[in-house]
Every structure is written in structure tokens, then in C-alpha cells.
Image 1: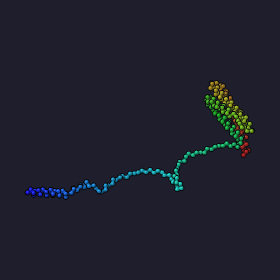
Image 2 (image 1 turned 45 degrees about the horizontal axis):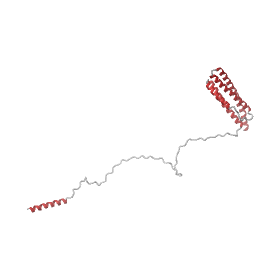
Image 3 (image 1 turned 90 degrees about the vertical axis):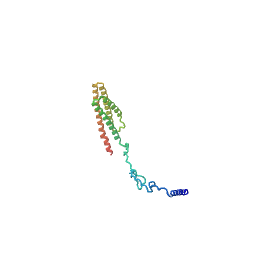
Image 4 (image 1 turned 90 degrees about the horizontal axis):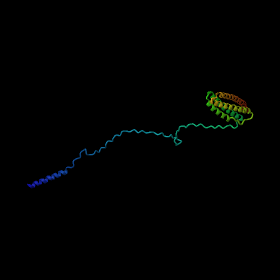
Length: 221
């Protein structure tokens, strides 16, 4: 009896061991098995790329160098140098020098008279001094051609009269500013008379030059 029980236990143990060997590992769950299908590629939104085009220098077929366009620079006028004509007629040169000196002196004299008429005696005093200096600087007349003695004499007379004019107005302004109006009036009147005599000499010179120097030019042509 005991032997039969022992045989039964051995058989049960054998069956149990055999059952454990024949049963394999449990199949893996579908969720644990990695998927062999390719994963979908994530969609990428298109991006806009701004491309700045750089101007390319124009190339010519005959020249491989780039042609660059430049804005024109400021125009520069050529400097003209006036060379005096050394062959000019001496009488014409003399005439031009005399007339230029007379024009300058006459203009300054008229300016002094206009200032006197405004009644600004301090300004008259100043302008009379300036005119007196101008007369002294213009007192010499050089390179006088032949047959121009008439011009020379009247020119020196003009210088003398304008000098008297400047001195009378300078002294008159001094006396006026010193409250000696009676003496100032007499000096101003003497100055105006000297200016009138200077105008006579000026007219004589201009008339003589227009009649004689112009004729010389016609004869030469």
C-alpha cells in the first residue's frame, strides 16, 4: 500500500515536471512588441526666405572689367589769365590810366558831397581825410607821351583843386563840430567852389583825349 502511494507521488512529480517543460514562455503582449512600420514623417511648414539681390556690375563683351557708373562731379570753369598787350599804342595806355584815375577821384568826391548834404559832420570829417589821402596818392602822372602836355597841365590842376576841396571840407567839419558854424559854412562854400573848378579840368581832359587819341587809332587802322 505504501509502495503504491510512493509510485503515485513519483508519477505526479514527473507529470508536473513534464508539464513545466512543455509549456513555453507566455507570448508577449502586442503592446510590448515594437512596431516595424516606419513612423510618419512630421510635416514641416514651408518657410519663406527673402533673398536680397545685389546689383551686379555690367560686363561688356570686349572688356572684362566691370563698368561702374559714377555721378558727374561739379563742373570747373577754366581759369583765364589775361596777358596785357605790350604792343598796345602808348597813347591808348596813357588815356586809360588818366581816365581811370579821374573816374576814381570823381566818384570819391561825389560821395563826400553826398555825405555833407546829409548833415553828418563826423562822417564828413572822416571821408574828407580819406579823400585827401587818395588825392595825394594820385598826384603823380608818369610816362606822359609827347603832345599830351595839355592833359598833364589840366590833370595837375585837377589834383590841386580836389586837394583844396578835401582840405576845405575837413576844416569845415572840424569847425562845425567845435560849434563854430559860421566859419564852417565859409569853408564848405570854398570847398564846393574848388570841386566845381575840378569838374572843369576833368571835362577838358576827357574832351581832349576823346578827340586826339581816338583819331590816332583811326589813322593806324
